[in-house]
Length: 381
Image (spheres, rainbow, N blue to C red):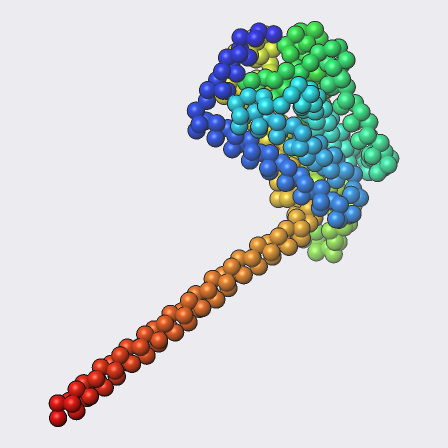
């Protein structure tokens, strides 16, 4: 590892202008808040509505939400504190924890997306019987458990080999050192936890996209045929003859959007990593590495937003959870307004009373003056 680039990044991180410090901290704070609150809201929705836990695709959605929530809890905050203070403000144990945790959660996310792609492939492309045989709820839970165990083997070889994570002053998180990459660990990570999942995702969703497009064309053709023949077949028979229901197609589109969003965030990360691997050093600007970190962490915040927009059941649960919050906020606002109105009314009443007393006092003074003048006239007479 060339310490020169890390030292240069450390000086740049420490000597940033206040404006740059505020902007960088704000963006990462926004990502952290969105990821934490969004995935927490999704988790509460799943807990409160058992129906959301009864489908296989939703089990994968829950797995992604858990990994993203854990990243927002034990990964992003340490980097946010580093951006705010301009240095690593924690001890070495926290650094090792963050480095281990980031690798683990990234491995979980990529493997979950790969298994989700396989699930959609069997549901859309293969027969319903083969799908139900392979993707039962029990087998899905076992697969998710195996997936988490496999993800542990992303950071474990690095730790077992005696390496330690160090604070990368450009990326502002604790990462593996450069020596381990050239000892084969980097090739192992890229092959097992990046290349293979990406090949599975791209291959499966390409087949899925072709099958869904064919299904939609056939569906429109049958709709036209039904309208011309004036048949009375309903949507259920059309779905059963066309294998896929409208709901299944929607679920497939949602998961496809999730994958595209994930790849959009992680493509710059992979490109920068490849450039660094070729250069053998971190030769890019510090702002590039800060953007690298923001892109990677931003992927944890997108999924709850996508589900809330595209999934009607999850969106309805979001609204049910947030309605009391809106009610209390509107109630507090109305109480403040009523208190303000009552305060204004009381002030107006007080002002009227003061004005009335002033008028009475003025009247008494005038009467006193008139009485004095009358007495004076009587004395002269």
